Length: 181
Image (tube, rainbow, N blue to C red; front, side):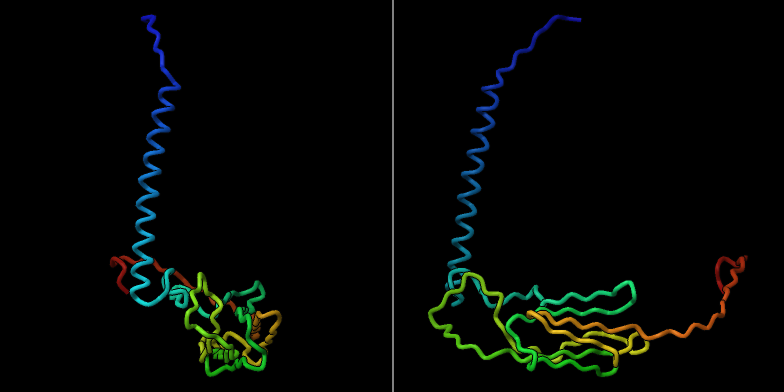
């Protein structure tokens, strides 16, 4: 074994690393600033204001909803309806579908000259949104609806399943012909 000693100038290595990181950050900031400016320019040419189109969010369901089953097999539909009035909401069943509609309140807006930075509360009419609720699985007539603080909560109880008490056993037979029936 040799007695070699390696010496590192840790300070110089760190200085070089920081210089590299600083130059990378400057280049990234310049490119990001340039990209944002190009997006603003394109949006202005399309007549949508300097920050793009604040009125259109195609990736979001309107109105926002949460749908789930409880442990008791109740179907729960929660709809966020901030700004809507109870008397403007319509809920009905047609066959296996829950139909939901709502009329947006009339607001006085003067869009001329306004530039929104973010606009997610644009209220609009909702016409017959459909939610599949099979009548053989759920007691549609027993549905309870509650509208409180802008949240509509529908609870559809499960249909009572008669207990037959009969057990059905399926027998499995070994196949010698490669799986064909």
